[in-house]
Image (tube, rainbow, N blue to C red; front, top):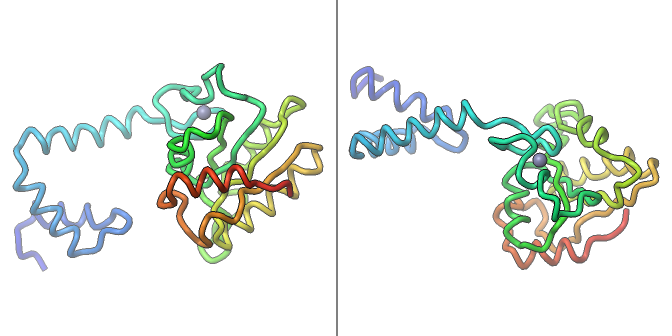
Length: 198
Ligand code: ZN
């Protein structure tokens, strides 16, 4: 129903397309935006468009970046022979916050999930395999501990281990099925420290 006129209705519709935003929240956000000072609304719109236009995927780790390679892959002080595989950019951000890991990352952009029809081909696995070489000392599988995360870790282990590369899995300190993003830094540090060879 078009209670608020076309412009407001369209704004609500666009906002409700975002993940986790239901109709009520979209309405609340739309009214909030309409009450914001004009400059702030312009800033918001500009930052969305600029992010979309300038952010790309790092050609090495597949993280979101505005420079390629990204600042992590490009950092000579990091250990380029250890690669931690995570599901999403936010998982990498969570591990970076712990300051415990000095290797590189690989972002899969998801996990294998028959339920959601996500297969290995949908993930950045080809790109991961292409990075591995004789200098690679270890691949740490830090996908989540949900069924999807475990399935993905098993799948990757079967691909990588035969190459003679050490494959390890983060410890069970991470609560089952939890989104890594919401796990505190101490738990993440412990999970990393307590990783076991697969
Ligand atoms: Zn990178």
